[in-house]
Image 1 (cartoon, one colour):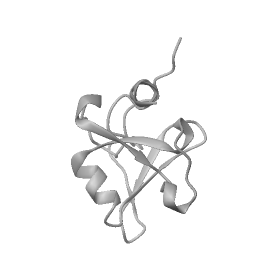
Image 2 (cartoon, helix red, strand yellow):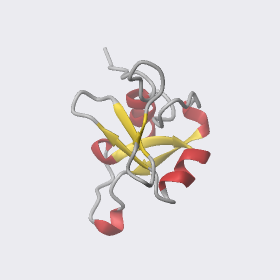
Image 3 (cartoon, rainbow, N blue to C red):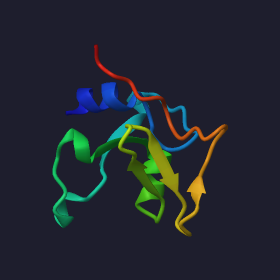
Image 4 (tube, one colour):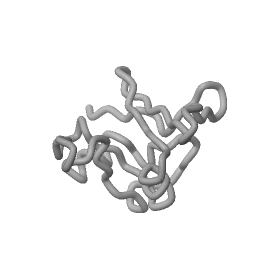
Length: 93
């Protein structure tokens, strides 16, 4: 699961973060206690800083095209560069 998340996300998925995979933890997008599954569809790599932030009101979500969006606790989206949000989607060959 960890290796698949590393290949899938390529590093921290939070907008503008360039933390490499080895600085990241696998985060459940929907907590298992709330019915979230432990699988790649419910996983996101987040560095320690951003993992802490999502547990204090920030939110990340995967778009249908595989790119990530990051939201502040007040509901505003964090945008970096020309609509860039997080590392590029890495697909396995």
